[in-house]
Image (cartoon, rainbow, N blue to C red; front, top):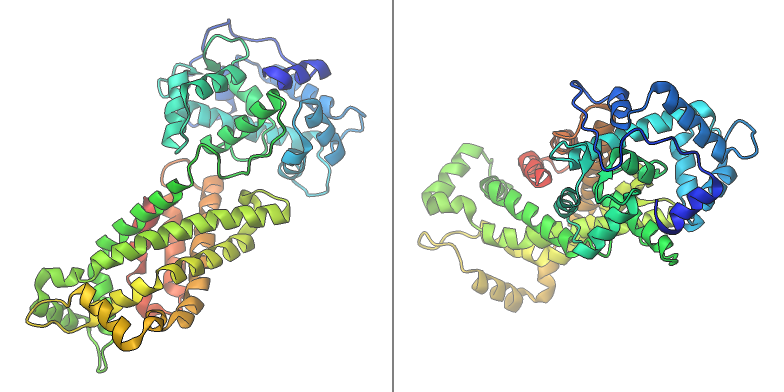
Length: 448
């Protein structure tokens, strides 16, 4: 480490193994097969015995009282000696992630298990950033990874980032340096989380103890949530527009409704474009709806996490359920007038083979029924959307976390999670008649 944090490490005498590689050299690992501890050892040029001694020395550093276990107080003191402020709650988070049996103490085996899992995790993301597989991370590779994660960073900040991690000041980041920088970081090592961690440590280095909220960085523009949600919603609704039109036509039938006659009727009256009637308004509606829901969901997760004393990643299924339900209600209320006009547009009879004009239809509702008419049916709609949106987002994120941990590596995780959560919502929804088109729409939206 550099700066105050690095001085703190040297001051307390944190055990440091002798470097196994020459300065300026990268150790490219070409060992075939799935990532294992052998890959980590090869990248560090370290034997199992040397690694065991390093981990034991680190454990003893925290166990200054030599009691044979670590508790919250010992971990907090150790992190404080490394210049990590208590308000970041890393001590509590590190205790939680290490304490496998939940007894409030971390013995050496639990500590070593954490070290094994963390070093494997750090090696995997190191390899993902090191696209040239040179055994080190170049500044341009780090910049590419940050940009792909939606983080805007200028050349000066990038140089500070590299300088902070690059202990030998040779302009590149070896895996040993990468490991040392993130080894005690208790959260998932995603690019976004790593950047937040660097922001915090960098502020410590320059003497500013300012807490930056998890999840939203000053360099991850909040508008990204609106843009991503809007594009995902627009694409998914356009792809499923024929099903949406067919669903609405079937819902307003007063006689026995069948799919095939309804399809023939739409085709006869309006042709192929009839299946997309109202889609322009649907896209206008669903883009802000998805964007508002995604944005509100992230904000509410932060608020719930802060109230519980955790990060937004640790709020649990109940916290996600509440955040998702409230976010869905907020989004539905914001766009409900457009939803009502869209439904009226899709159910109006064609006049001479032409769909009614949107402007005239909206004006007629305003003049003949009054402005309150745009919110007809809002309450039952909210009663449906709150559990729907809550289950939607909570199940999706929970299954994504589960699949990352136990099933999948990297690719396929999001699509598989959306498949399962989509199926659960599809078959459990009390509004089955309006959800039979939901699964393809949900898969398209969450795959973006």
